[in-house]
Amino acid sequence: YLVNKEAHVCVTYNPIGNEMYWAVKGRGAFTKSPRYEGPIHTSGTKTVGESVVVMEVGYRRDEQTIAHTTGCLAGLMRRQVRSVRMAGSCGMNVAAVASGKVDAYFEQGSWELNSGPKIWDFAGAQLLIEEAGGVVLDP
Image (cartoon, rainbow, N blue to C red; front, side, top):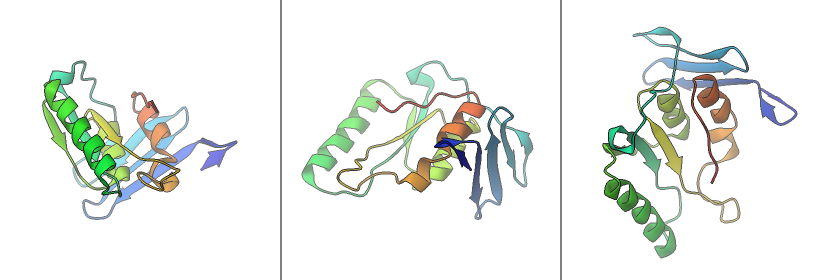
């Protein structure tokens, strides 16, 4: 739900795990699943060496994109990140960060090249992450 291009309500549902994640601006982030129901928070991990990072490879398979993606993975490994995962769903990746299951998520993309996450992937992501205590960057 957007007001003046700003998300005020975000809902993400995982039908496989029967998990729902939601946030309301100024009221926090929450989940309801078979294992837990209540508020969620980001992990609070402070160092790269302790971090579990989720990344996605996007849609393009040209040489430039492949080189950039493998370069990102190599950079994470050189910084001694604890683990790198690829789960396949932007919405579920964001929910994993918001609930503290992982520490960070990024996906390379380009509006001009029609690659990477789409508006429906991240329209509410910033709200969910921030209401859970995290930070969203678009470098």
